Length: 203
Image 1 (cartoon, rainbow, N blue to C red):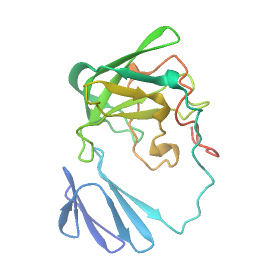
Image 2: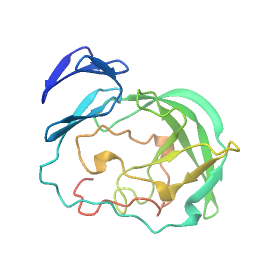
Image 3: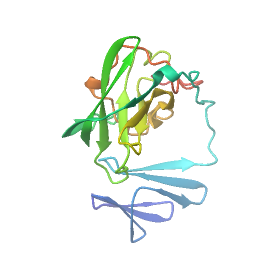
Image 4: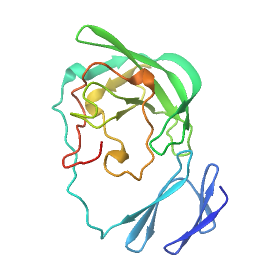
């Protein structure tokens, strides 16, 4: 923290709760720098990702399981707030708040997952996240997937695994992605949401 990085014509300083860009305070965002875009990320480990709009890109694209309503659940949050530490792909723990638990049934068996909110400057105050693995992880799907969940007007939540998506690290090893907690390792196969990316060579 406090060090200034001079990159492609911009002075960028990492702060405890954001950045200072060319002398002005800012939250995480993208900054134009000629042919480059600087993606400022603050995930308990401030980072600047340099995106080159003219660089050659591998032919890697998203693939999806067919939509299946059996993987959509309307549930209440079992509140159980606590501070937790989440591992990350950059080998540095990230602070989060456990909001509670969601319970659901698949094929007659009961399961539950921890719902989290990351304690970071760019995290939404209203949205909960479920990071999970399942029996398809590392084979039919990427090694982990995420679902964002917002509250409904009646206080319930829609936990829809058809909206499960791959983290950015499924497409590039340079991102810092939360790793699902052990409590969210599901023995059942969730064949819904995003699959393993087409053409991907990553784990």
